[in-house]
Length: 156
Image (cartoon, rainbow, N blue to C red):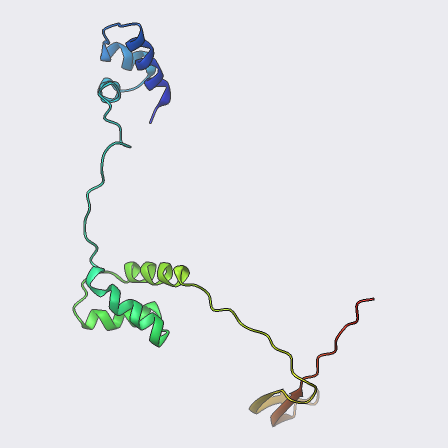
């Protein structure tokens, strides 16, 4: 929207001058029809967008259910609803799933401390290949057990 054209139209209205839209368009470097639309108050901001129902509307509950209960990906959901009769594109499903996930409240992770020796983490890796500096290949299994003990810092 051109504010300079609107200001000029308002100035001419205040002066009670009949507006020549062709001359105004030439002066303001715009189309005369644009000047007339501004004079009549028909700007793009005033127009209402056509409300068209999304192709996803009937599948939104299924999508939300799959995201909430199954932690499904957009690709998996697309394949699922495509088999149910969805005729739209993957990009639309991907966009909706992303927006839905971003609008969900994030679950807080609650940290807690235990007394020494009550909590541990275990990791296991099978058949890890290592090569020595002589070119020998060793296949090993790795077991890692970390016993947690958080020390408290004293504020002095």
